[in-house]
Length: 428
Image 1 (cartoon, rainbow, N blue to C red):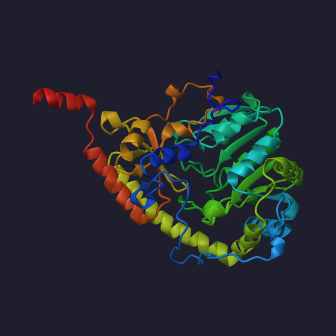
Image 2 (cartoon, rainbow, N blue to C red; image 1 turned 45 degrees about the horizontal axis):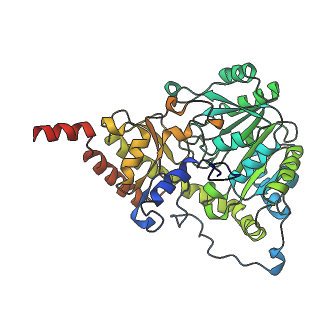
């Protein structure tokens, strides 16, 4: 008798958002999602916004678009992506991006998987906390060794270029993977520091792999968007690769269209990896995406995001502070708040307990421990620095946020620890 119920297959862990929605599904989330407040979602609201371009309602295509697309993506979209970065960030520069510097993929995780599959036998640095999906991604490919860099909550999860240089040299890092702005903390490596990071990359021959999926959600008073593309000296010589796509910054999450931009030699490797990993993104959606990269569309969409999501950020920040949840730090970007639970009743100070309790009130959040990226579970989960934290999303509509806050308030107000119930029974 085979005691392994999965036979030849291992048990694959779920990422943070997938785990919490799976647990909510057991209580009926997918049967009646309209009854829930999903403050755990990693998706922005994708409907109409005031002053935003009209949403694309349907896509028409001819029979030729039923064919496979090239693994690297159709030329027209790759040209549009390259032109977008050149217009927005590289005006007047002699070194510009071309279609050979762009690879299209079916979503950001596919782009990241291609990146990981293309890495050699190196030390790859990653930060704590960061995007939950990095955990399994950094474990599944065995050629490289993931090396964690723990950021200090007391410093707002920031690291100076001088400290970063020590980490790169001391840990022998050949590459560094990070989200900018960071999911979940919202901290941004912006215009004042990003040039120094790229200079370090050049000096120390350490490739930067930058996840820029939240780069249009910037709240710290700088320009409305940020990209490494602005600070690269030569697009072929600088070892800087960044990814973005329609999912967040254009609010077309369901299209699963993303792109990777970098030196031509890197894009060639990624495309080779894509040929056996995923085969390429859908041709009709790539064709439809081209219009979304036109200047007027980008400007209107970015301005609409800035207005609506800033309003939601300010509302949710104030509301949860009134409930006793303190932010680890004020986010510079993203549509998340990373909050501490220390001031809540004793039984709710643990992120997983808080999450479980909110499920009973049809509210979803993501416990902080999921962002303590731990490939291969080499560190004990019980030692996570983020056990008493939670990530709340202001991706949903403002109406959903308000209802969610009301339910969280009720959940906290009506919470009773087992000890308090025991004392109550003895008194009775």
